[in-house]
Amino acid sequence: MRRYLLASFILVAGCATRPETPLPVVQQPVPVTPVPRAPTQLAGLTIHEVVQHFGRPALQIQEGNSLKLQFRNSYCVLDAYFYPSTGNLLRVTHVDTRTPSGSGVGQAACISALELKS
Image (cartoon, rainbow, N blue to C red; front, side, top):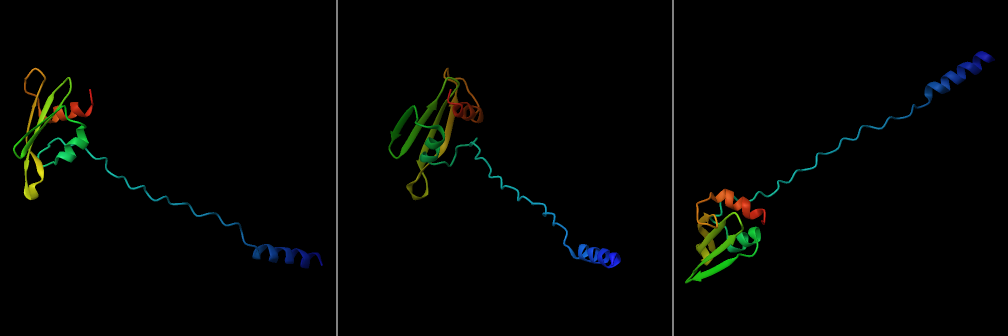
């Protein structure tokens, strides 16, 4: 009788399911959206794009159908010249950069300095 009882316990124990281990959760990589880089060249940008990037210009001069916007800080002065392109949309066609004293400074360095809002 003990053998039958022991055999039935073993038989029932063999039929029992073992606890399932959860499958490892595979996390999907979060897509990295590139941070918009500041332009190092302004040629071809519209007035809206330039003002959105640098903020309100310190000076605005309109001559005929062209426009000059000036942005400046303690490091440099940037003059962006806009002329009509296709569809009469004003776009940057020329950029002058200089220090406030008039010495030359690279366009990329001036753009970086203006981005710091100093």
